[in-house]
Length: 391
Image (cartoon, rainbow, N blue to C red; front, top):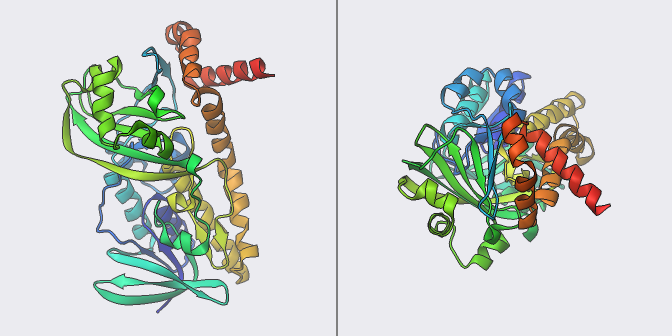
């Protein structure tokens, strides 16, 4: 069997790539090893950079139907002070099991052939160029050739490893854990981030609102910090409840719904060479998570669209060489570098040393909360202040 394009992985990156390829009239097959809808442990935050994509894909109203808006951000500092900041760009909270399925169905409606329960085990490589995939489908070996493959098979990507593109920088590997809780105490309509010394650098507990009493609660922590803590991911929830005033307020009487699920979060600080002859890599498989808050869904979808545009251009000239597909990196830089730069500044100047966030809250809390100063303005003012002190 031969197809023009194979996309491996129907998460945000893969489904978005398949959608835009199908829209361009390209023959695209979208493969995923799971049965859909499938759960994806995540904070469920849907950030502003992809709202326009949801609109363009015709799913914005459906996304809103299953999402809870927030009015801003609460930052809880290590010394147990906190600041509430308004933002018109505050994330929605939409369960990934639902939202990812909405995007995958949009790709299918647009014309992509969506095959579930197909586990891709390796890329077909001929004369140094990717020419398709092999795997297992319904218990039987399967082989599908293609002009080009989009690799979007997640944070443990065996295909990215095969291409030599997988990054395992210990400073940029995080772990996350998520649980849905009912009867959360003093719930707000803000997306909440609670920092503590044992989580640094950049790690935190989060609470994202889903109703007046229900929320997505999670932990985000570097591999090194988790090892130093001597705890398992799931232990962090009880530790936060029992050892911090803010954690006790939120979880003292809260009930876990279902189970806590954990996952690996490979991050980066800027777009890099996620291409090879006959292949492009997107999403978690390409380490595209930002290294401050650990968000990756928006960056994955932007990358999926960039991958599709690169393939469309390559198909026009019939050339899928690494040189031609290197246009992908430029597109990633154009669409994403500004996003990474902002988060890198946040990580460096506010989220690497505990005293930085303590000081930010002390300086800005009263004025910011009384005058409703937007989150973006406060963070920009704080970064400028820190840079001036260091110069």
